[in-house]
Amino acid sequence: MHVTHDQPNQAAATSRDVASNTEPEGESTYEGSAEYICPPVITDLMGADQILNIFQSRGVPDLSTNLDLSTIAEHPAAGDGLNDVYRARLLDGSLVAVKSLRVSLCDREDHRTLKHIARELHVWSGCKHGNILELIGTACVHGLVASISPWMENGTVSNFISNNPGAPRYELCAQLAAAVSYLHRVGVVHSNIKGSNVLVSTDLTIKLSSFGSFGSSGAPVPVSYQVELALCSIRWAAPEFFMEDDARPTLFTDVYALGMTILEIISGSIPYREVRSHVRTMCKIMNGIPPKRPEAISKDDTRADVLWPLLLKCWSYDPSKRPAASDVLEMMNALLVVG
Image (cartoon, rainbow, N blue to C red; front, side):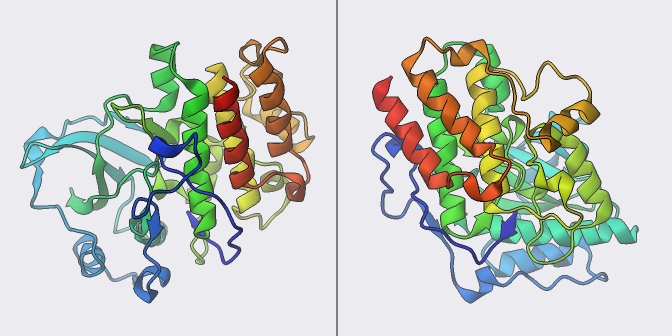
């Protein structure tokens, strides 16, 4: 996640108020005090316990002693090249997700990555919105800093729509747009929006997650971290990531990925599904060739005929021609009325 000083006037909405595009008082805020805006000072000499103490002093509870370690399975329930996610319980019985980064405090490159993730957790702790996964605390698990968040029984939106073909896909997309619009309004770039980072609660509320996989908050991102992230998210990446040596996540790259994730939710397939090779996929992106229009966005469907041009705008080769996340939210809300 990247904090930007470019803060466009983006609308925000919680999952309960997507259709009306309203933002109930107290549900969508950002802790804008100086201690939240300024990232914590983390040195190479700090261990996991010291880093957790910094977060605790800034209002993020250390739940290390509240975790029932016996409930953490030997193998992760989910993960990618960067993180492992375990299903566990707190001592009060609450189901939680424990997400830890695969790093070693003895490795210098890994320690830089840990510092980067700590800064991102810091920004995550200040984001308060109904469609942003809650960070309820941190913990030291097997010597590693881990984030603690509520466990989402429905899993990722990708798995949810696969298991529930009749799911309200347009509403889920509107909720996702509300989450991204909120982040942009408070000056935060997510930088890794895709279906596997979008969770669904039991009441069908979208929860945008994976704040440990985001771009820089001002400090350089470790090279190994950048490479791993790129390999995991090529199909959602904007062309400028491959065209510029010093490309960084922006509001524009977020909107590009938002469009790809909406396509993923509506169609039930990853972007460029017909292209198996990562290299060929990257070539298509670099040449400005959008994904093929899927059957799920039929030309005979009124909503689909409005949605497809919107997605094409999100994928504009020229970043400045992409709509703002608030515009995407407004259009998705309008499509809910049409439906």
